[in-house]
Amino acid sequence: MKQAQTICPDCGSYNEMGDNKCWKCKRPITDDEKQQAQANFENTLSDEDKQSLQAKQAEETPKYTLSPNENIEYKISREVVVTDIKMPFGSMVVFILKWAFASIPAFIILGFLASLVIPLFQGPAGY
Ligand SMILES: [Zn+2]
Image 1 (spheres, rainbow, N blue to C red):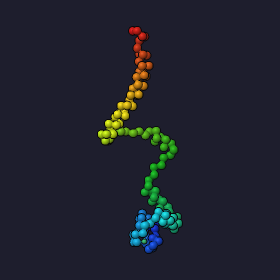
Image 2 (cartoon, rainbow, N blue to C red):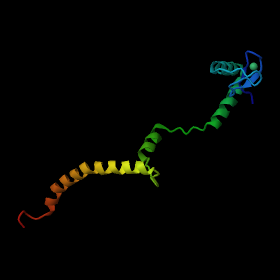
Image 3 (cartoon, rainbow, N blue to C red):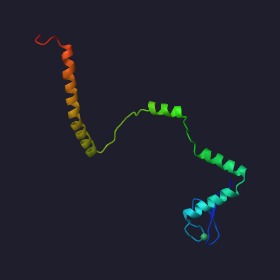
Image 4 (cartoon, rainbow, N blue to C red):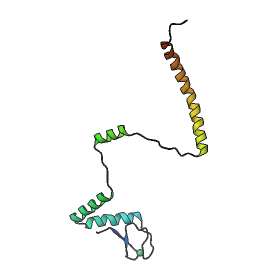
């Protein structure tokens, strides 16, 4: 398999794409030089090579692509199942305090709703 290589401008050594330094003279290899090397490399490829390279990249990065419909279904059917909560003690205390304070208006609303609904199940006033 052919691979892109950078050529060190100082000593002419070939280096792997992933290397940030020339293996021989330790000169740093810049991102620009890497991009240039990659572009040059792709220009030298035959169509066949390009296809096999693309096939290899496709193998390495499996993409799960969804059709638009599937994507919508996925969003709708997604649910979160919480099996455990790991939280430091301090965070837990703050969390429960917040919960307690948040529950005050919630209970006021519930109480208000109850005051509207409960009389419906009671007999006429005075009995
Ligand atoms: Zn070098």
